[in-house]
Figure 1 (cartoon, one colour):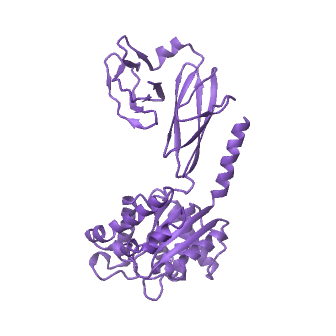
Figure 2 (cartoon, rainbow, N blue to C red):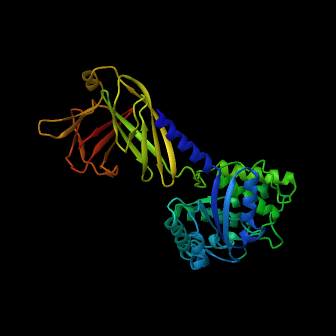
Length: 410
């Protein structure tokens, strides 16, 4: 058990060190540089007890294409393995007609995001969802009011994020809420486009809640604004973000690596099968005081009883800990065979599963590397399933209702 304790300690120490510390690169234009929004986000973060290493590239009027064709942008992207890279287009470009966005915006947003992922597989791209102009944009009818322009920007940034496997910080949605419910708070500078100090503070609170997935309420940093106004902006930003995390496609920086496992019980022998979101190290605590196990598909023999099995998984993008309770029955193997589905080989050497007419929900086959590969089976009228021989199959996993059966094949 000392090994388990050491492993747990290492996991907890690493988690506690990284949990509230992130690195962020902001790439955009004057909507970032006015009031120095990146610095405001960093100051707000520090006042809430968290930490953010920050850098920025802010060029007035730059579009996604401008950044995508500027070597200095890529120098910033490659400067370190960022947790988040914030991307922002020119204030109008995502609101333009779909064909124009598809030709002049989306390809360059994708080029930038692909470069971020290529530089570091664990970086996340997050888009700065901006807001409609104070009275809209008169260039065409679909954006000639604030509400119409803001809605097009919202939908465009979500579409761009979906196309580039990214997330958004919904500043524009928070902006609309403040306009609708707190009209006395002026979010605009004199040009009716750029943010006032209040507008930048709202954006900073929205970024904090989006990146840390925490409420900004209670931040002592006020940027010189009235504390009551700050409290309103903190609350609005936090609610808009945290009430709709799936909508904004946000993933916490400590949650990029995922693991799960299934347990196939055959008498007193249990075959485990782990699935991870990327390659990783797998350590198993079988829950009975025995030495730890390793690898993707270990097996373990128990005495009858109920056990809590814990999988400790770690990879380049983080770690995950998964627990599952299993019960090893005290009944005989003959009793198990008559009550539950089981595998056997027939006289011709073919693999057969006796389903006992349980409902089959899913059938999967994995190779030795744990990758899913095609499996060909047929369900017979006598309650059996026949499997076509395939030397590449390492194990077969059949999910029944409330029951999972795993069989090692080779």
